[in-house]
Length: 158
Length: 138
Image (cartoon, rainbow over all chains, first blue to last red; front, side, top):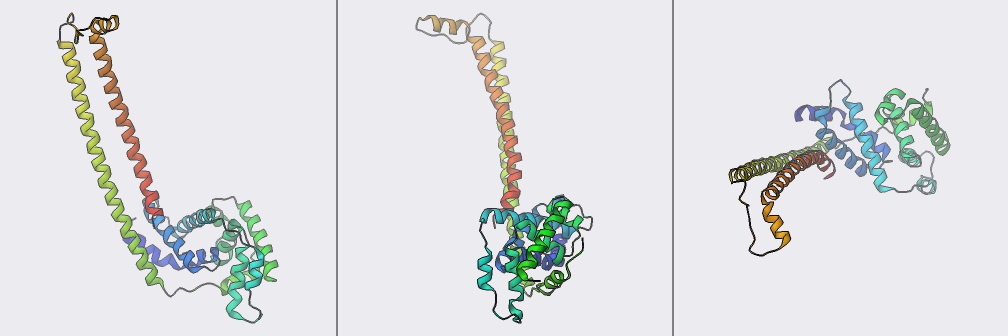
């Protein structure tokens, strides 16, 4: 893949990629954009090994997912539900805090459940596609989705 | 597996819109330019490394061959080196000088070959490290 081809693909997919990483980073835009840039550089360096079968987005998301997990492993920050309680807006009808609720609830999920939920609900991938992106079995993805969904519904009171 | 409607609606509502795509792409382009520069620098380093390796190999082979040719050309009954002092060990060394020199030359050539193989492995490792360097240096 030439650099021009790579840039063309990236221009088409960069919003979806950044949205995915923004959800994984629980609304922290700077972190998400840094991870997106790292993932894209890694993708460019290994683009010689990419066989264009029309799945550029899945391939890119796989690299981004691994980049996120490596970043999490190096940070090792602990997130608790108590922090979420103190930051939620007091007014139920306050639209500006609607996304904040979701991000804070996502933060309480382990990284793998968070990835599965985001890929399923935000990006619309099937379980089979999520398993390929995250390099996990379909059964494991189903369990992660089930656990993640239950936790989110409990925390968001849906 | 069916999607939970409430969660699906919540995720769709929060789907972010980015109005700084141009700035993002400009920043990415700068990083890719840096990657290209590092790649070229590494390629030049590897090329110099390879040339030095080939030169060392050729010099080593020629020196070894010249040494062995000299060894074979000298008369068999004349020791290659002698010592002015009298000692059992030195006497033994003088009598077996040809064998000793042949062993030393063989060892030198073997070390040369081993270092060539080690250099080739280094070059392969440097190529693999290139990707890590480009991917993590930003």
